[in-house]
Length: 111
Length: 116
Image (cartoon, rainbow over all chains, first blue to last red):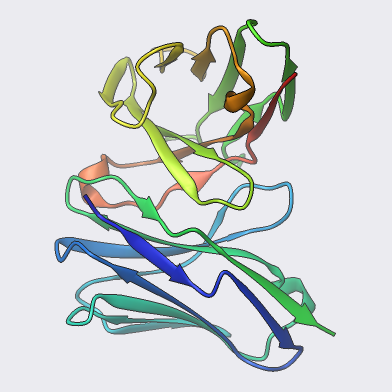
């Protein structure tokens, strides 16, 4: 089955700086890669996703990049704000397969 | 437009009791997933259901755990004879399309089960 690894497990940045979270996957058949943000006491919320026919996708301050050859994908948050503080999960899914989640990155944005 | 609704938000059970967790998917969604999350860990898949059918229960323990998604009403995750190791947050997610189309999952806010 698929194995998704996520790094780092914790990340602290100053407000206004950028944050980068990286994930690797093992199954070359995986073709859909969503990112979720989980705030304390809440469920994960989808923030951005990318499919394997695209190398990069942007949505305001958030971007995701995908390198299919190396089997890794990354979340980039620019101009971080305190409300970006949360736990972020990456996931990978292939045709007919279930979603496999990374172990999460706890991001703290220091005002 | 209500999202995925889970109840109760918090559930306390003594060892040996039964726990019933409910999930109403988003309007128009007929595919439901249950995930379990232990503290500071990722989400672990348990079961995938469509209306009246269990499609994939490969992540669910063989004993004490069961799930259903009836034609009418919410999906239910049932844990019989709970043990302390069942303490976790249980999340339900729904999607509009079948799993093979990789549609995004929409999660509820979870049920936090504590077994004393």
